[in-house]
Image (cartoon, rainbow, N blue to C red; front, side, top):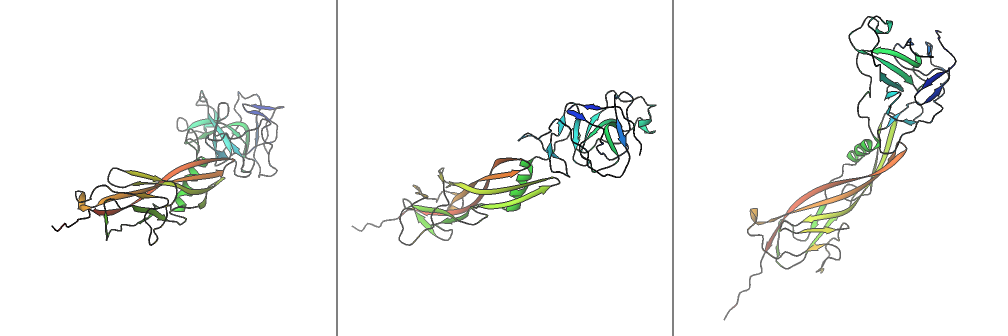
Length: 303
């Protein structure tokens, strides 16, 4: 075991005692640091966390210590950027050490030297306030981390939500009439109306999302958009007016492309999710379409 230490180590987020925290790579003590602990050993008893709590703020980028699942800020003005790979914060050394410093290990001017402060005690060798040379920026440095909302979107993708399974009294093989109500509905299933749930995960973060459709906007092709708050009511024999969702055409579709109105149904889904110590709501839409032929009732008058 190699150890160089003074009484305490003072870092930007709080104090860390002499117990080391672990980082991958070769880490050494910079000459200008008041105190530094560097230990080369097989990982054993977990190190203590900073005495100042480090917690993620809902809605911000999320970084997680893999061993504990605890969320921490992805960036701190004093510590730098957090890497999910090893549980360490990296700050670009400014100014960079002189080319003669041993930390370069003969690599100068390639790569860069970073200050390292670690929270995850499961990776060795270890440092509490050391520095290291890296050929390229560490994972997460200056980059956008995955948020719970990002993972929630992946969960939505897993649900395979689709547009409404359109039910309509005037099917493509029939012709409706001007002035006669056209019933509108969707067949209800987990993918067309919900509810539908799925869980998605990335290393250190798992999010569960539940989706429910809340309304369907029916673009009837004649300039009218009918918004219905439910899935609608399937037509039943003898029905005239739909109790929930219908449209009445006032003109023939004869002048439309292919002699038919194009009907597009767009369902709005509300997705509630929870994970990473926070929760939120997403809104997504799914659409489907069909065509409707509408004619006029011709009356033959015999004098």
